[in-house]
Image 1 (cartoon, rainbow, N blue to C red):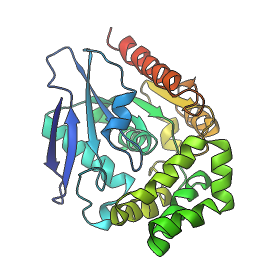
Image 2: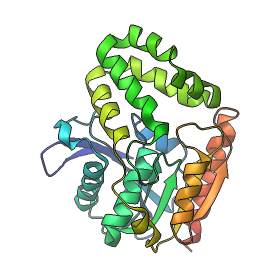
Image 3: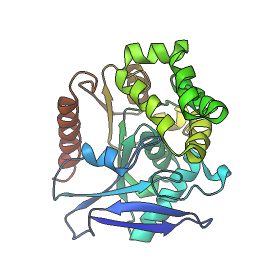
Image 4: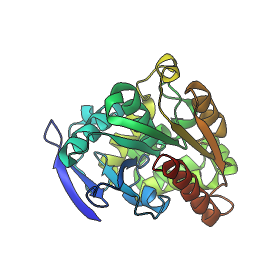
Length: 273
């Protein structure tokens, strides 16, 4: 696996990993992480197969990628950066997919860059089409509290809110993610969490209904931020999309990982034959 970086059109240095050049048999899969995550999140659930070449861009402000100008923190910009990465690697067309934010990036690519996308994987979507959905407002809470009160007091105030208690009850895994933001570098964390959840993927329901490419939508049980209802809505909008429900991370992380890998492997392998 190669870890390297490239420069975006506006000069931001962004890191990526590439599991190896295409030897004529390995299909490129642009496989994107969620908000605040790194490439390790999506590596964990990607099938171990020599058939597929995983490419993951660590978006601006994530891991060691530069934050860049604040106006560059958007789903639209991340998707445009991904196209620059594909050009950098000489990849004309790829399967695109991702988890949460990564799913939104993939959906935007499928709508706005259809010539670059062969199939798409929308895993644990947090958005359908609207901006600032209710399920993402907890991220904005975190950003505001971290900016105003700092790590220790901000976390205490978050845990006292009704919204946090609702998230904790429905999805302990989501709640743990929210707490973890208070341990991270505050500048990029506040910048990302105050902007990305307030946006949408920049596609309309009508555009989604006109997509004509194989699509897998993945959801897991017990997930406040990425509900089965959201995934179902996405799957129903995209013609011919397949919806796969996998176990919750809250109850059995191992089962979640294995089911995730199996769903990806089945979808990708069918189209490799």
